[in-house]
Image (cartoon, rainbow, N blue to C red):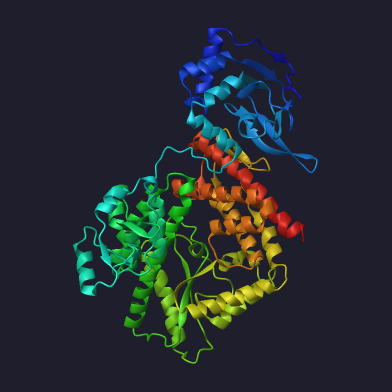
Length: 607
């Protein structure tokens, strides 16, 4: 179907006055604000002006794109999806918005219908000329990409220190010290001490690396490593050194200190300093430095994973230090240390590692009440320890709400009581309000006896093996919070038509995605990984029919965390955002809606 014109169509814009007026209008709006004045004048002179009355269809779903790209000069246009034979509002466009961009980012056919909601004036520019112009402006290409998908869009001007090049290989080779395998320990230590970076590598007779002198489980990166690669390897291995090797042959040793010379930050060294701290006075300023490190690393949504990884390691290191201090303080207060083994576990956001700041972790003590070593007085130690640990973490700068403990639960309980809590929640999810307890299925070990944690984890997994309504109920409850429909004239427009000046990105984006990702994990009887992005990756492999939808949801999650971090909280005011940011969030909203619908169809409607 051709483009529909109902009332009037003006002649091609030939006069210089009209052309200049149109160019001035376009220059005020994204993505045309990135185009030069000369190119804008050429675009303005290539087009037409159209007028439409209210309630007219500009085009319908599946129509071929016409010879013009249309920009709304004034008025309101509604984009409509067709679902089960019914039209549903998808987006609302106004002044400066561009129509039918699918020609550049999709199949070329219109992906939805467009209908005027008021009288509308459109400016048109020749599509072929616009396409040629786009190729010369990366900012316009990024805008068009964001219109189609949130995945992989790089529309940001900031640079992350994670993208700064690390020490070049010539530098590392010049500082490399090797020691033949079998060299006496004192001579090996002397060689390491004399090296310019305090590191030396052991090599066998063929010149291949055996390991670092005095090192244990040293991580390895290739010579074409990036700063991201090095930081990931160091954090994963809890090491401040990585071996740079090619086919096993050492090319250099990279230390955190050397990396910081080039990129400005030593993430691994900072995490280790926090972990080794013995007082709040040490940890608190280090935590502030860690916050700065994360903020400087977060230049765009794709940085979220690495920055979350760093933040999670920082939080875990602080928690480990606080555990030592809390145990010491409890004993100093005259309470004998427990004789029975125990472990400390994390629940919720801290367990998932979905953190871009120092959140207050939800920590609980778990002790095995069937252990013969358990004494009656041990229970007091565990109870006081849990409280003291929370105090220490707060004093070190961790802030924010922790999880509310369910009825009949508290931060210190024996293993039998934890089993009771999970059994009643899984077997009677309605009576025990499964949704309010959902984050207790995000669990990881912080410290203590691994065997006790394994008993709890294996018990929960065994309970999840039983057929029941728990997973379907959780899937259904993910629809309790959904993202807004769109932004219009700086306001948030909800699906029911309500308008607001701001929205809560935690409730509207991050929370629903976290909840739905958890559904997929529990449906596959998995507690680990607890990290939301890792859960998305696992779900995409297990549900290949939904892989594309799941990938878009993962990108929407990155975008949600990114803008939450930039805003310094969960309240987002679209009027304060640029056009590109609004478009990226709107695209993420659509991806979340599709993913939630897929979740519902997979676990509720299919059952």
